[in-house]
Image 1 (spheres, helix red, strand yellow):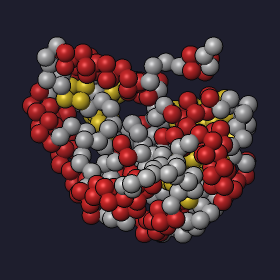
Image 2 (tube, rainbow, N blue to C red):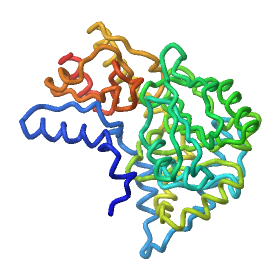
Image 3 (cartoon, rainbow, N blue to C red):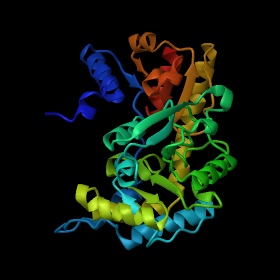
Image 4 (cartoon, rainbow, N blue to C red):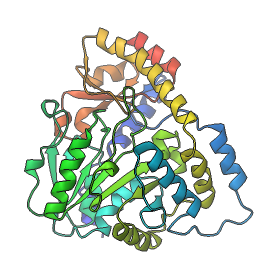
Length: 363
């Protein structure tokens, strides 16, 4: 009676972390949760006010193609941030966050019976979307020796779609523009699509990372951006896809069927968010302050922090998650994200600065 793809799936990893958190709280333990990557940073008052101002007396169904103002704001941000011109009418579509669009891409593209490839450790949704679409799945290990980049020589002949995610969740590693160029060239030669999940592109601490949008040939490149981490707006569910016109047209045709267009009042708040960089700089400063507290405490334990130059995550060798849990500190075991994550844990820097200081004392 139930779709076998769903029945065969393990519990979504972060459900287990939430169960652990609730159990500790019920036992009266003080909990500091570095597990789930859901920011606790406040959404900027300017954005919240824009949402309030946009609330209508009557709210009709939103259109799948999104508001022209939002598409234009997204395109203008791409031009400012990456120096890339995308057409707001034919190459941009607003999304309900990026998770639903990531999940559905394999259903929009021709992937049935072909292979969807992604690196692991990884965000679980690339695999789940592929399986529900009837595609095969192939993972490529992301290991320290390769700077957490996949070996593109291992792409199978029947590849339909290749997912990449840089800055990377969970490791925090970044990819150079040369990597995206190589991947885009292979896509053009072999006829697959490149999908780049860039949810963490604005959480950087040394230099801003490049985007797959910057490759010389974008004809087979689809890029996902979201306000969730950049603007601490996870609950607003607002992002966009930038892609070739053919793929954007397919997304616009698909999305009314599943009803995932963001609400117009959220879209109007999103226009304000994409047009402002001050609040993003302040967000980076808050994460930097938390890094400055946690990194010395972690290193003082003799643990090693690897490849964590961006994102809101620290990818750490050495800790025992069970021992940390006994102290009320929740982290994500690396193997939650794939076999190549064994031996690592992920600290998501989502607790407050004061909680981070308390965690550093506990360590």
